[in-house]
Image 1 (spheres, one colour):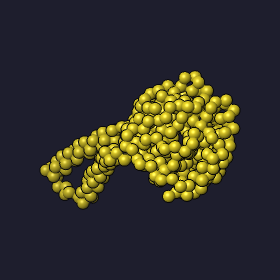
Image 2 (tube, helix red, strand yellow; image 1 turned 120 degrees about the horizontal axis):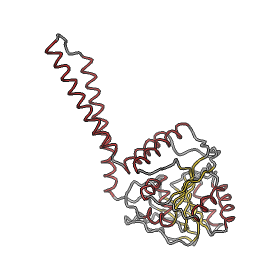
Image 3 (cartoon, rainbow, N blue to C red; image 1 turned 120 degrees about the vertical axis):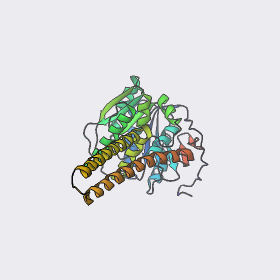
Image 4 (cartoon, rainbow, N blue to C red; image 1 turned 180 degrees about the vertical axis):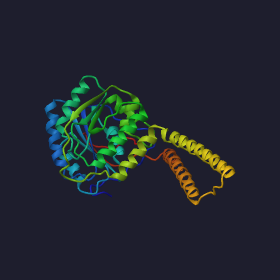
Length: 336
């Protein structure tokens, strides 16, 4: 039992059916231990959205927070009918939080924004203007990025690999992006277990706009990404949309094998036409090279086999513990 009460809902392995659009704009926020930022984020979102003159919903998705984030979100829901809250039973990851937001969103346009306040909520009207122009996907691009060197380099590598895998231009998107209802419905119906929103939308090739946004240093809380998570994220991105690593492993194996035959012919010639004896160093180098190639190839195969294993288990992407809607507390929609 959680501190707010509520039993875990039964998971359903069917495809998500997102609710019909009943408001103009949904702003969804995946949350993991952001209690210090939530009150300010809510105030700035409310002020910004009210000024647009559109009907709106603020949707918080609690990805298994261990601080007071869940209590703060519930308090915001209790005082404001425009606030909805989805709570996971445990931590399922940022992508699961984003997909849960899309599955519950009621907006004709749905925007996802990070809870760390590094991208100002005041940038949202620019995105709404792009939707009004007819774009179906809108991404924020940072003017100047205030992140660590590791985070910047990791993101550059990830987005570069994803662009190559999908064959579509993909920018290093800021923590604010959004989609028209038709795209949200498509994403909610994607059956795969490992899903990446940006890659799927790039694969769909819908009309896309990029908007420059400010990016501020984080002033409260801690970043949820480290080097290990970035590496894992990069592997998931590439293996979800491309078989290029398998091809690289095959080509590398053939090149190493060809080099081995050439080396063997070389030493065979030396054996017959000179008095050179085989050296210990040559044997060690050959063993290390071939062993390294074999282990790398096996590792790449293991990454793909592991993803097949995840897919065939058909476990739900997330399990909802509580759902507090802007229309009152309801049972959560079916999860995939």
